[in-house]
Image (cartoon, rainbow, N blue to C red; front, side):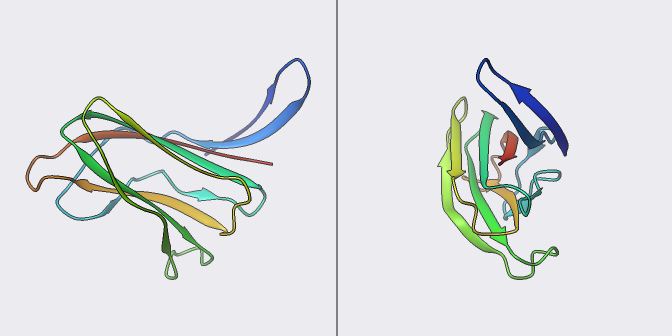
Length: 121
């Protein structure tokens, strides 16, 4: 997690970003290590996934418990084909914590996915 200030010609905006390493999918939903965002201090959350090889299905989860024991899917499982990207965004983040899980779309054909996340005020 990195908190930084970004500027453009009109304003400065604080952001929190996560940039986990590329991860190989499995045949079951697996948390993308490092994709967790603590959104309590922020208003919006967004994720982008890029898939390098073999189709991957991804799901974004939100929770109010820090251990994700009450997590629910805030974006239903969605397939992303090799070489493509997918996006999720919420302008008024209703949950305190977010994370991404991936799985192989076709069993045994594991894909490599890179996830980037951002939260901002």
